[in-house]
Length: 342
Image (tube, rainbow, N blue to C red; front, side, top):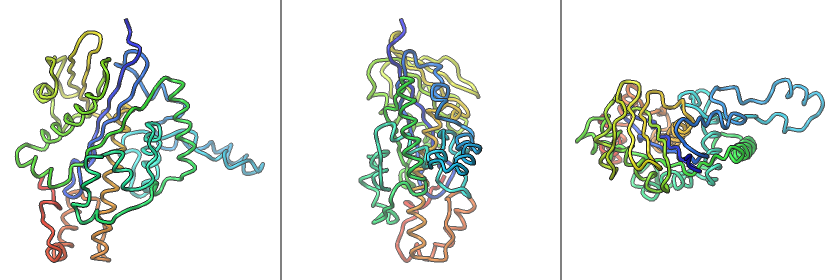
């Protein structure tokens, strides 16, 4: 007998490679009618969601005709929302606009409309939001949100997304993030390799969101962690049932547990961002990391006005660290909270 409702969870991260700034891991939690395994949210929400840049723009012919005929500005509003791998959505020369539009529209679907930098942290990562000021670059930092996205476009697309989701019986129940700053990351990687540290953090977040779901079938899709193929032992630390292995390989590793009427399936896949729950997690992780780096660069530019900002990735991170070295010593900032050793 098919269940009345099932749940889909997608996880992904941003900032695994950098030396500066946080690693951010996010999870999105969706409810769908019936059995969740194999459900394609891109298909269910295809009238409003796309995964190809440019596909969501207003029809050029309509815009031209509207301009000629004096039609309302509504004709130029985007028709669909870009929700895809953050590497597709966010391209630095083009700015944060598309990334921000997608994340904030998704948050609106989950019932959240943050209006500030700190408000966004409270929604996504409540655990860290109260302790942000332990880092000097967060002290007194604030910005209005959205930073770059057009508010009119956001309202329009958020409304369309809500309408289509309701018609499809789809709900976005939660978007959760965990920012792992250099001091925490360094402690973990002193004990574990990077891949294991990422898996431990992701499964901790996953365990939290699963614990909040009622008894029902759950399908979880996670992006693979640094090439790791074997997750049973790590999963078993968070699960009271026996974790059963249904395949472990380079492309995917599959695990299941629980009673027959409410099984949980967890799949680790390469390129998991091609699934909408993971794509939204990818975008959310990237957006929160970029907002953290905004505060970080602002802080150092206040002390060194000619300093070129950094995204925190290797090579440029080394350049940046050399440029701030004297000021860092003057300010007494410990490397442990600044620099990720791995």
